[in-house]
Image 1: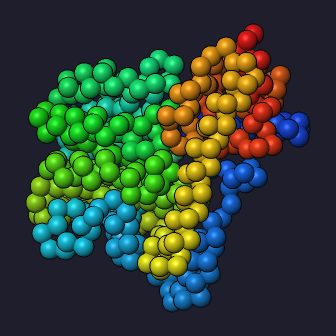
Image 2: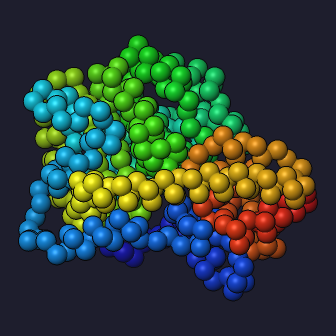
Image 3: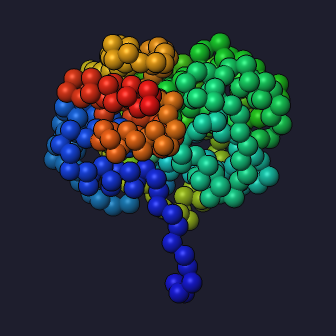
Length: 397
Ligand SMILES: Cc1ncc(COP(=O)(O)O)c(C=O)c1O
């Protein structure tokens, strides 16, 4: 069976992580992998998470199977994060299930799309998160592209984005990221979301929203405004949610898939298809992260603590962006980095090519992806000036 199978090339992010770990320079700077880091360069367990875990372990009665929809307490608690009317009950046009992280939600969405319309194409922004294409291709779906940013990946290309979406045929699916766009940091302003809702309605394409950073762009409620706006206008919608970043639960694989359908009967039909698909893949999602999220959201004190911690992460990311723009200017940057200030979240494109990324790595011990994408959460008071000087040196060569 295995005699003739060939190994695939290594994932570039994972090999970069390994190279950074193997680099013995004590002042190396890792801006490669997409996890949040605090001012000490750590990715800590949030205090709210730690407390919720202790309570959960004390009160846990069983580890019996939980069911394909996941933890009912978790599902009841999370819907209010993006809905103002989360307790509507009977006649509700929203369905919701727990998934194995945000990636699991995207994969379930892909399976559903393939079951509804195998010839549907999924439109991804250029550039998009590196895992998006593979997730949809794995379900046998074809891909198409709309421009999200200019070729440097630093400024929104709203006109070309809208002009392209105006050509998307009925029955195709358009994936849009809500907040802290990965990899550009460029989010869509609300007037563009309104135009997209209008277009989706007029042309009949389905919008799939990827909400992986809620609370880290402009705040917990503000970040879900595009979801509420689209849900108020469109008959159908898919929403993939990740709790990896905003709860720091990366390895617990905690996420959700929500769907909006025309009628309660359609909501149930979609659910039965999703359950059938999940039964044949992971059978049911893992419990621990969902129990922690539910424990936090349903306890007034823990919820406040979590929101404070989330807000601290959000403000730190904004502060790092502002500081970096200032440090680059102070270091005599030949380029304008003011775009950093209007972007959100952890990521940006530095505007360097693979050769410059290699120089940054070899000469300065700074690790960014060959595309020039950097995770700015890896910067802090102890390394930001050195990074700015290293980048300016690289740009000047
Ligand atoms: C845009 C986007 N969507 C989805 C995810 C998936 O997150 P996870 O599967 O870790 O919950 C990520 C993670 O980096 C992401 O950046």
